[in-house]
Length: 361
Image (cartoon, rainbow, N blue to C red; front, side, top):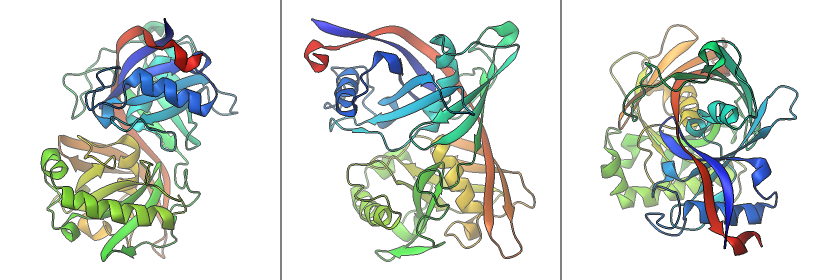
């Protein structure tokens, strides 16, 4: 005997995974973890006994429900399931998976489309962030077809506009969780920042890197990962996040200079492997870091002359554009106001995923 759980299998941005209705899952966090581990097949490098894809960007889970938040329509609870370690991390959120939350909510009947554009107000439960998603629903019908293209995903699809509000300090309560623009850890200068995702960021050159290495080159550089992880764990403690040994937060990012104004080379880590492209949440933090005077990234980017500014983050498979609305005071104090990105999503499958019956016995 096995237990069947309804789900939608969605691509959101450059990630994918199952989207569940919260009503179909246990409330107990330990029981929920065991369900997700079984469903994704965590514990094997290929996730051979589940529907995971053997990579951190394909072992992500979205859990949706109607929201009782005064502002939001939908609650989005995110879970990062490890590929091999049979662990589930409920601390972070994921902006790529967020891209398909609006479409999935419509597919589940949690919200109804309206007119040609449907606005869905989403609360990211893990961090408390509020996001306004605008979906293409011509004549009140959800569509996945369109002309929008994003690097890291083949073809085109309908654009999903995401506007993030009030995300500075959303996880730690502080834009600069350590109170410093630069901290020095293990002889490496880092900026610890919390905008949509708590991150530790450094110059690629300080690790002996160019910042333009491929994902494969970085993943094969285990000495770099060992140094990075040591810095990340010490930074996590300084940021008030406690012992981050088994947590994917804070995430880690690298910067390198680019010749064009408002362009910068970036690499983003999940954190134990290199992200194939760029995380949506991480993109906001990295763009903010590059725009903030006094950080490790500020002098690496030729600064734009006005706000909102379109910041181009160059990643291993192309570029992510982040429209950042910000203010810099006369004393160089940076205030993040909002950020917007355009991504795409697609429904890949729907049905039931089966887990061993004794997990929910």
